[in-house]
Length: 70
Image (tube, rainbow, N blue to C red; front, top):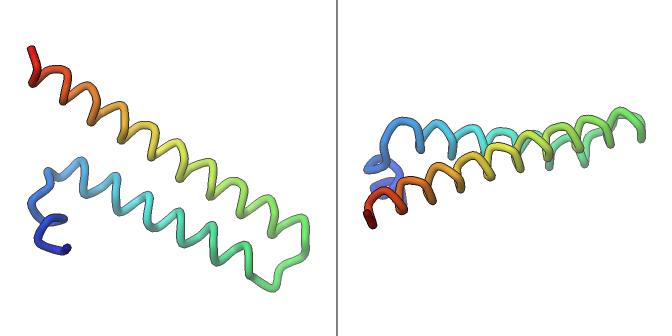
């Protein structure tokens, strides 16, 4: 698994790393001992950032695949 990760280009490694980090923040904030509202806000923001990074990564991969088909 780490072999596959190290074979990716630097931008994809950064995208995967950020998705993992913000996904972990999302999960950890959801089970944190904070109050209900701050916990929900932090988990929602972290999830939104994670989803945005995933969509950005998907768009990058699709554009790259389309360029290779031409």
